[in-house]
Length: 314
Image 1 (spheres, helix red, strand yellow):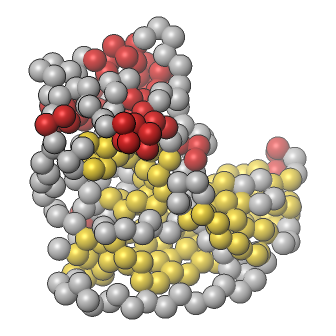
Image 2 (cartoon, helix red, strand yellow):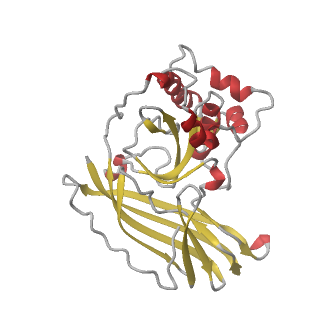
């Protein structure tokens, strides 16, 4: 099935007095692929700006934004519509036999393609992370180990939102048994890499049907979200969301993939002034369903209008 969705993503930085700004880099457009189709988008800044688009080494779309005037408030407002395809239930897949047990047996070609996603990125001097990862390999089965790791986040960790920028190290998250969606995803990725899996970091949005009805939604809705993709021969890249105990892709709308979280920051940039001038940041993300798309030929023609000098993207 497919849904027609709309995303509104607003970020505001506040200061005590006008400051000047350096280049900002933004990732907000969903990745192209079989799971979705972008129909239209618009982007604005409250201050005069110029934008240029680049594609990074992992084929993520990145907007580089030059803010051309000072201000005591800088606002980025982005809106987009698209179709999102997928199954509501756990996705069915068949693994090749060489992927059924831990460690997965990748072919030489796969090793060459996946090496950067298999190599651990962080230190594990006391081997606590490696030991924690191995604790999930009870019967040696791949799917069982992945499911048990998801269960561990649900049963033994506490989600803790924070305004501070950055991502905790896997060791910090493991010790505290708490963190944000980015912290959870990064811990799971580095644990999986120590078991020989190819795993990558994904930043994007989460569609929460509960919010459409005014109910309490899933953890991480109302903001950008992060999760994990694991490459399993026979199935390909599979989504695992340790924050919400999800191992299917219908609710997840990917924007950027990365080897480590610093490569997939939704919005980052610089400003010039005194440290006491900064008042804070406000982020609001709305992902809502506009309707069902029963015929995949419907709604596929969208129009992207050119940006003027007061518009940009995040």
